[in-house]
Image 1: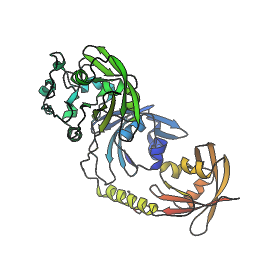
Image 2: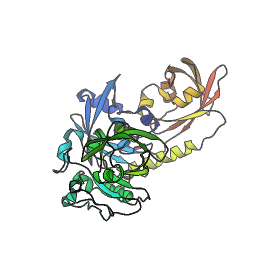
Image 3: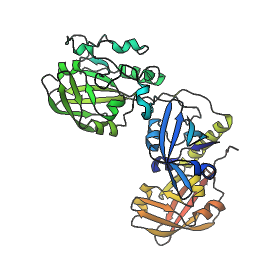
Image 4: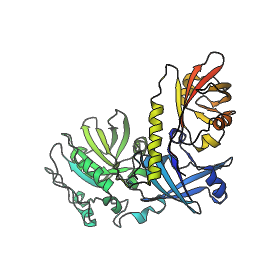
Length: 427
């Protein structure tokens, strides 16, 4: 069985994806509490939640969307293979299939790594630079023999022990076009300050990251433990602990996991650590991510649907008013679920201190409906009772965009609803 979902705002904000009602009715009983989602570059395990006849991807779903840069207008094409297993292809706003960044299933991670990998001897230095002096070392990314190359920046001599460091990253990552593009972009970084580059891999994401001995020997000599300030381009900073565990092992430890989480670092990202203040020990971190896309065409029907959806969105975006308003993209849950979410920003700005009230909805031909607005918490609100009738009477479909304009909030709350209809559909 195949089905598709067009990503809209509520999927992003709610951090969940509700599966189509028809699919749930047919297959809901056989689904377990987690799904195996197979994309062309790997396998994801995503939690399934069942409630009130609906089934949703939830636990792990936000990380999945973030990893593939999924945003409003993307199309997800599913094939259900039984036993809670799904095949998934992701298509961008231009109706072409994305080029999938490297992903390694965390349930079988060791099998995906090179045989040379171990947490004890990994350093993974792409290159080290002393100010504007460029190293002659540029590791090859095409064969495993390159993993044992030695890094020795120009102008410095290092101990024989430090020269034994190896560049170790997943082999599959080396052959990824997206990774090659990311690495190329990182290699173009230049600065008068000393810096080094590191490719993120599993142990760096989950625990801590080692500082190359060569770099530490040159610029952090005689320091056994201190705080290092890491900053990024938007001005945010993090304090991390620099620890000398052994004479040949130096790491960024406490505070590093927060830096990883706050900056959404993934395997295959390349970080450039630039030492901008040697006295205060401050580093700017430049993050290079995999984002390049290569087109693989959709069927004409889905391509037309995507084009139609984009046209509908653009038409809705053209709406302007001096009154406050918000836009909602209709999807399965809003069509069949008997309720529609009111954005938190709108609710907190214009519907403050209201836990329940009646709102009158009016369309362009003058017809009106009374619906109930409820707000369980100060930052959440939804239109519930009466919404199903409004949907049916106005023949709302998935992909339509509704603009809710608040025209009266003195005694009786009233909203004008402008409906921008999707002109294409898939049979």
